[in-house]
Amino acid sequence: MSDDLGKSYIEWCRFRLLSHYGPRLQCCVEELSNNDIWWREHETNNSVGNLLLHLTGNLNQFVLAGIGGAPDTRNKPHEFSERQQISKDDLLRRLNDALLETDRTLARLDPARLLDKTRIQDRDRSIFEVLSVVVEHFALHVGQIIYITKLRTGKDLKF
Image: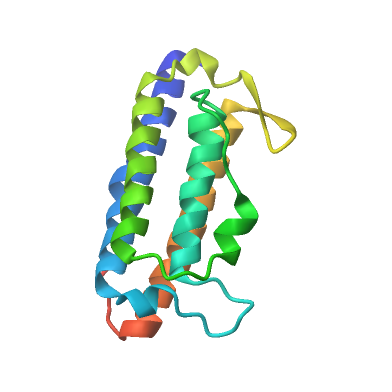
């Protein structure tokens, strides 16, 4: 992969996570009450709060640990089982911290490493694959959060 192409891909990933999806999440969380953050229609559904914990955990494991070399302290089952109503401000702060550290990690990423392997969730993956999975995963859950926000508020968020 050429360095120019690799650099462009990393920049695109950074843009999508921090400048495209991040503000949409921020907008949704601001529209919701703390009770709405933890609302779920059925026990089998995820609340926005659980999805925010999950996105934070995913960034920490895949990017900060998998690419950046930080310790992997993720507890994925807890992201979905959490029922204490952590405040929306705390949830957003955690996610924003992870997004900013992700952006710093990607800003330092040498495009020549995109085909290097890293081990995440007991599987070897290229860094290119890791970034692709992270952006796709983030987009999926942002879409869910947007939908829940529209359900709870009845507002057109103009996205």
